[in-house]
Length: 572
Image 1 (cartoon, rainbow, N blue to C red):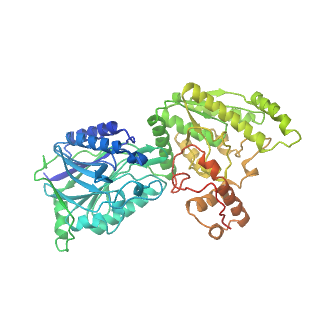
Image 2 (image 1 turned 90 degrees about the vertical axis):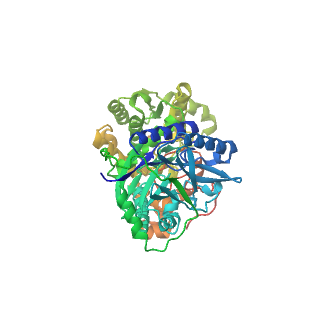
Image 3 (image 1 turned 120 degrees about the vertical axis):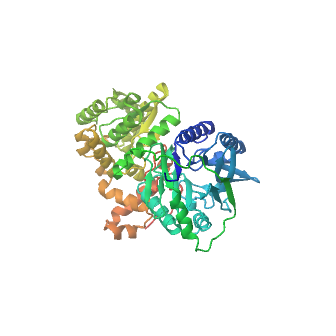
């Protein structure tokens, strides 16, 4: 029987600040791994605290409490090595840290050396970078532990640990999702694996935390940079891999001829390992995501589900207009929360078409959700009568359009207050970018599911979801987008067609290109590009007042892109 080291990754969904709940989940996964004769189990970055803890890190008691739960966990760990992320405290400074726990003791602690300070993270605000690297010895297996960004740097901890004899690298991470991130992640780690001739265990977090989605997709990679086992996307998973002792020893012999770069410390865990001769486990079947649309759709489901449940909501409500955005949000809500927890309000005005009513009713029927009809014309008339003395002689314009949107927002919030439901807004990234949304109207709510989803992607997601089961009516998928706030209104009355608008938004917001670069890349009309960019710039004040929403692109509004509201700089 071959001698093996059995390695596990506890890909778990944690809640920021729920120290006891996180501790219990880690402990449960350790017990499960022990029952399967696992030797080493790794958990994600900052597993004790949840990630990112942000300004909770400025609270001394929070740091002390996290250490108490780490020490409590250590007392529960026997006959298995656990690598667990936490916040360490030394001499008044705090560190993003990884503990190596065995038989009731914290055998060693590694401090993250390369702090992430871009996008959604601001680690330098809180943490001190680590300066020391370690190699641990567990019954002849030499391994190094590092954290997230550390593995992305060629001359960082991985190179030092590998040159000091480590044949296995355990990287614990909380790497946020966006479209294309997994490919970049695997490419970088594959390079690190090959260059240093090491196996890599990459333990990533899964779950939604406010705007951020962690996609999981943890993996184990061999020394040639090939993935040999991978956890599921957007779901909790316990991934177990058997590594042959002879392979790991062979790697060590390959390195003998090289000049070794010494690490700053060694950790001796144990000279013996329990039951090294194990029967190989049967591989569990896992579903792997195959398309971008499936990936984004599952990210949105996870983001909505976690935001709702982790914040104590049981049910959601949204306005259903008969358009594609509200149809997609309603469908995602049903998939995330079950149909009995989703209510739609159809709020027609004098400008609402019979077609929209038919589409809304068909959608609700397909999804098996409750659709409540709340006409707004009488309320709208009351508004107009009240304002008539002040607006006398003035033409109807966007003012009267916005009143309708705000009536609807007010009604949705009334249902939220009365029944404790979370209001989902239905605006998409294209609309939010250019301000094609009404403050305190269609922007009113608690969570914006499509906030970072461009309109063109909305249609792709609708097509993808209908390929599973046709719930979004075909007429909704085909008809021209309209807000129906005035007679015969179409989105193209105000905006370029979305297939032209979305590329400009991407190039300006996500890629930070100038007008000249945008025009040269896609031969876009300069005046149209200038108009779109101007709309993006002047509507920062609206976006600042929008509810949080799920990040699925490399640069979302809010955490990723922080522009001053009072700002006179304009591209020309």
